[in-house]
Length: 343
Ligand SMILES: CSC[C@H]1O[C@H](OP(=O)(O)O)[C@H](O)[C@@H]1O
Image (cartoon, rainbow, N blue to C red; front, side, top):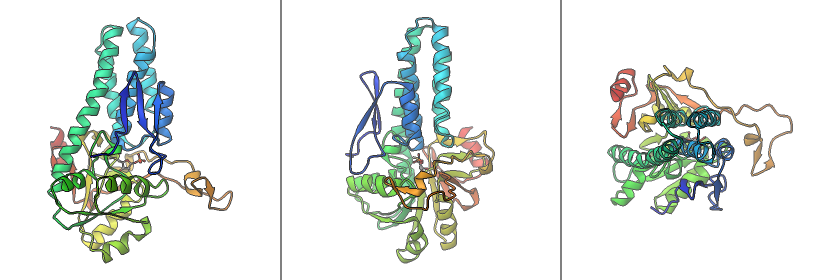
């Protein structure tokens, strides 16, 4: 695959692919402070639940490496403070909190300032490496759901740049391509930030995968006219009962899929499950700046002063989900199956 890595650790800094500029400009940011990592996550320079977690993990490593004290207690205090700060960058994707918790545990069990610095960097690199392996497994399992010639709809970007590599919902398409299986992807543009139009189409075209761009409002008509065989999306947080939060518009696709009798799949790693959240109603839904809706590429397209509601995510209830594809296999979206996954 020729798709660039969204996050990497280079020369004691984070090298970050600026996803806001894609597809026309491939530009990298060099992040050397915790504040710049926070801003990169908040402003969507890095986005996608697993990639946010990886960036935050490297942010904790930066915190430890840039804090100059040799007193381990002082160092821990600073790193925990920075970790808490990074946790406030975005509220919905639980991978952020999962990664920060993993980093915090490493901080707790480090006994010297030097070992703490070594350990947090090693842990961040491990989180990234594991994510690539996990995503490849998700792709393998998801590929069993599709047959040569299938037409599959997706929304947002759950691809390589939203993760360490391969993606979640897009992983099966990359693997299908490697194996000569022809799948056609219909990508919803994903208003307001256009992750589908800008990122999913770009990633799939880079890999020479058949992709067709539609607006979000064309989903029902496209399902009917193009004989869509399945819908697959990523997720930002999956509650203990299987309700799944993903990019705004996903709930609508799940309703449509049910209406057309089309299977609707969620693809996500175990790090996206939140067993402490009992159901979708308890998932915090991020509301973003109104300008994401009123402006397109900096141009105001709405009357000045218009009221705006801009939730970044919605929740597909478990009863609309056919299956959740994880690195451990495909499970039913119910409490027992999810509990068994973690047993
Ligand atoms: C591989 S999970 C990707 C996930 O992240 C997206 O949200 P955002 O672009 O706001 O970070 C979206 O919900 C995707 O499914």
